[in-house]
Image (tube, rainbow, N blue to C red; front, top):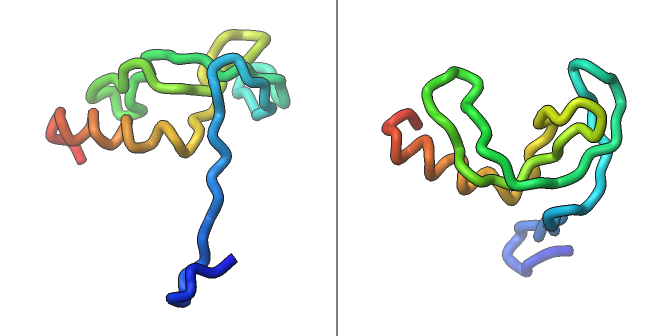
Length: 84
C-alpha cells in the first residue's frame, strides 16, 4: 500500500491482554505465550518500564517478547529517567 507520497504504509499488529502468541524462551525454547501487563526492568538495570504489555512464557512466566505497541511507553520511561 502506498500513501501517495512515496512512503509505504505499515500495518502494526495490536495485541490485547490475554491474547496468545509464540516466542523463544531462554529457559524453555519455543513456547506459547500470553500477553500480560508487567513491570519490565531495562536490560541495563537503570530502571523499570511499568505496566507495559509483554509476551509472557506460559511455562516459566518470564517476559520473552515485547510487542511494538509497547515501545512508546518504554521510550517515555527511559526519557523520564534521563537515559535515552
